[in-house]
Length: 397
Image (cartoon, rainbow, N blue to C red):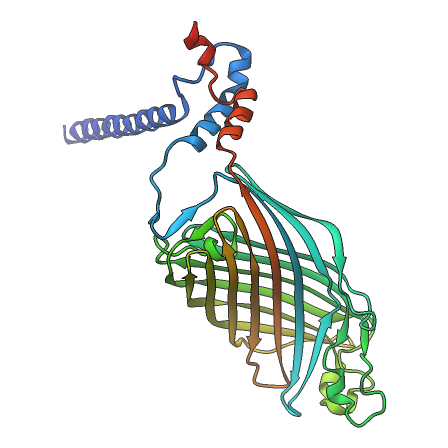
């Protein structure tokens, strides 16, 4: 009898559980249908069914929304067509410091200025560089590079992504080791040096209701009143620095460094940690602004290195720091805007033996742009594409 009672109880509980799951599933389906199925959008013919997802998407974009920020401090310009012409120069460097002799060798690529174009509107933002470049130094060799730097500036979360692949460097501080020679002005070129690096830096903005990083470092927001915010996040980077046919320290610099360093031809470092900082935008006479944001990170770094005879060695995990800095000076009258901005990302290791190494990437951008009010013309284009006012003819009849 007890077994029968237990069996009936289990069956009842099972039916109860199935009923709850069925209720949850029905609620989920009803919610999805309510979100995706809009009665105002026609869906009878094959053409209507084909256009339905496009019309639904545009309807969500154009739907009135309650701003997630204080409009007294921030003006959003996403609904305008924005065209910007930036002129950018990137800087990259990898430094090796001899801890015994306290000397540093600084390697740098021979970079160009690049001219680009940026377009943004309510649906999409994209930029491209048409290959217009200038400004490389003729006495510093040739650098072949692939350099991608992307900044995802959300309302609350900002993420910097960068990837670099460089081949061909020169010794930036050649003159530091040739002060007593007649040829002290000659730059030593190292076409055999290669570097590949990847980095990510993401942080959260606490006062996103009044402070906008977009207002200083992108073109979709305008900061109307001075405001600032604390930030916190995480970072990670990985870099491999190598020489194809010799060591990093070679003639005529061998005597300036420890013998052990002249045997190294590859350094690989992996670092990660947490960061925190503060950003502030100062608005002057409503149309001028000066912005600065600084984040300092603390974490660990693992350093590997290889010698010219093929031996792989490493240091234990050591303390490392990272700096992410941005600043900008800008004029913006809500239509025309122009200015200059600069960014810097640097990683610093604190190895206890043999050598330390640092890596940095910086960018300076001068820009000018214009915002076109496309509210009326934009609706004409959407109407011509059949994405809005698709029930107008039906209503007239």
